[in-house]
Image 1 (cartoon, rainbow, N blue to C red):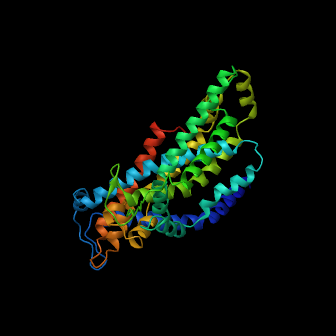
Image 2 (image 1 turned 30 degrees about the vertical axis):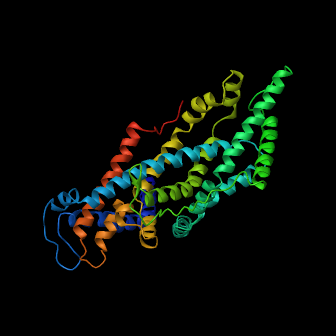
Length: 367
């Protein structure tokens, strides 16, 4: 009777799993096996596949566009994963304190994550146009450099004068005292305003029109359009990981921080010796999810390269390389080559995640 009950429970569980197993079998296992087979053929969607062995893989690493896509993918993944993890942890620690209005700020910082990729990409195109907000902000900053320089100089003069006067009166004083700094800033601001009215400080004639997107220019080895995508994706992915870190921080007992404070530990010691070690499981999850997501960058490349007019070699990634070979513009599809590139991307993702697990952030918390 007990054996029959176990059999019925097993069949019931299998019945519940059937939709998932069917989806997994059709959209993953079957697709993977077909891609694996096509990677050794010259299949082009219009003719029967012909076996060509490792020719597609050899061709990949002889294709400059593929090597560029590989470089962009690895650099993008490393930079975005590092930035989003760092700033998400920083925000989570800041918002984990019992401050007034902290719920409002948590909601405010989470809002960018609900923006769709298409909307974020359109916002990116608007910001980085020749006459977009980024160039306008740079133009304003450079034009007001005389004002900013004068403001800084007057602030230092006023602050130094207050410090000298306090020492003359033998009073305790600090250059970074908030009250004196506020007075110095106010005096410097009024001084700059007066000098501007007298015409002694004038703005420069500067107009910045940097072509951020339709360009092949590079910075630190990466094209400008890719840097724009890096900034946008970092901004939109930080909130999701911030929530994960907040959940992890809520699980750390407050008694540990209280005991550390009694022992005289400062903020950096408690952060490095208590917070980070106990957040390692969450940190492992965040880094792993970040690596997997960034290695599959596609949507933004499509928008920036299409609507933004960015050159293909300035934004191409491995995922877009696969897409471009399956659906080439005005050319014959190269499914075999695309399948080989897709398998290289899958293998690269698996390898990086395994290396991160072995040599990077551990998934085991401090005990």
